[in-house]
Length: 142
Length: 142
DNA sequence: CAACCAGATTAGAATTGTTCTAAATCAATT
DNA sequence: AATTGATTTAGAACAATTCTAATCTGGTTG
Ligand SMILES: [Mn+2]
Ligand SMILES: [Mn+2]
Ligand SMILES: [Zn+2]
Ligand SMILES: [Zn+2]
Image (cartoon, rainbow over all chains, first blue to last red; front, side, top):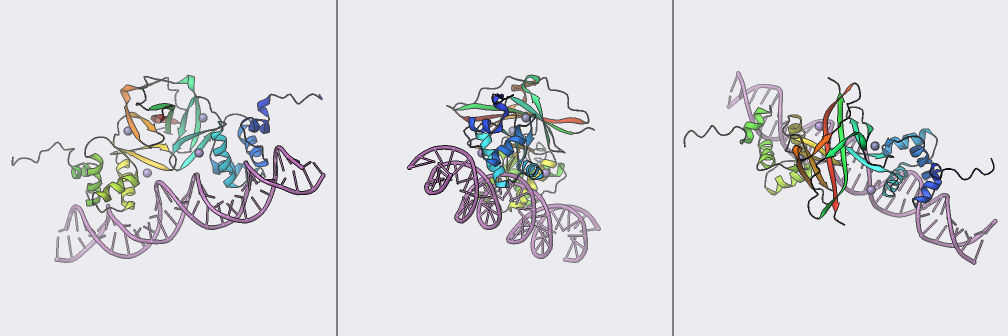
């Protein structure tokens, strides 16, 4: 297969970064691989940094923070706030909601279609709705 | 009116604290007065501390933190998470939702009745729903 | 291909919000 | 009034994140 360069354009991390206007540096490509490799993920900076280190990718914690923020501003990630004092970054940037397991810190997607929010009051004058976040907080049974 | 001691039991801060199993110390009574004085409020620790200082109430920041946490555990307040790295405490402990003005940090109540969340997926096995939080994030118009 | 350079990375310091520690103070009971 | 366990407090400690300023590198130019 000599003509193998016409891959689905979104599967190649470097291409995805270029499309988002970000230089595909070694560190950003490595992190993109971890983030966008398989299915949707919810990561913290510390968690992603640990993963990168475990995979022998040399990326400083400062760069993990920089990269997560840049990816978020470029629309490749969204930030989810469920715990004060810790940020989660979500590879699913579409409209959806979350289960949050308070004991374990695990975040789990709820597709937008599975849940309906009706009767949203109109935003106060001068403001517009940027996003509607539904978080279902879970504790252990009984 | 000599027989004035049968006030509506909830209006007196000291009584409210005793009912919650907390000793009505000078500091706790002062903070309760600020918190439960008029209508529902959303405060941060730093904000409440500044208010207390402005009102010449001598309360340390550590005590403001202690008190907000104790009030929360006693059910007099609830914690609302909308911004990573900062906790809000809400005097409205009933079921309701929020507008959050991202630019200003202002939180505004949406009564539970004004908005309906339907089709909640069942919690994963072993877990139960502790709370459903809806946050409508607002940015400046246009 | 070499030189160049704006942008990216990094170690470590700094900042922010919050909790902890241990000593002093106080509220409530005796 | 004495006692004592709870509370308060200043300041240290901590955790997450951002900043600084020096170094490095990807992409462009000559
Ligand atoms: Mn940001
Ligand atoms: Mn707590
Ligand atoms: Zn998600
Ligand atoms: Zn509220």
